[in-house]
Length: 194
Image (cartoon, rainbow, N blue to C red):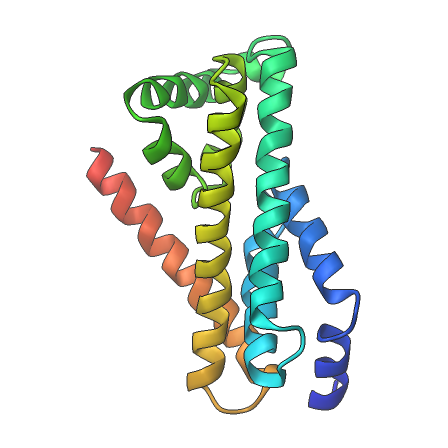
């Protein structure tokens, strides 16, 4: 695929919508590559100028906040024990851990969980089931989602600014860098938790 064709495809009118759908889907299914989509589009924005980097951040933040809010509503309506998968030992452990953390500091947990795929689902479900005040939850989720979106897009944009070769090189390199940063952060937070 030529650089021009890739830039045209990724900078087209549907790129923001596709990225937003991936980020929204990522709220429910952690295997959906929402982070990768934001990072890749951040790289494209830096190398081609289309879409604008601010639009990438805005759309990603909106989709992430909407996904978290939907999970909150599910937790509020359904709770955290109705379905059998919610009672599995590992899921129970994650949900109970989220509940303990939310009791200690809602803002800190929501901001931290936004960067950890399964944790954000567990925290949002538990926040809804715990009946955390909706306006407070939504305000914190919007701030957390905006910070997350800016970070993900900035990783792609920074790599694209440093690595020559246009979007054909910047997109895969930025994705590899984002995954590596995620693995390092996971390892550090796991080590700190012990």
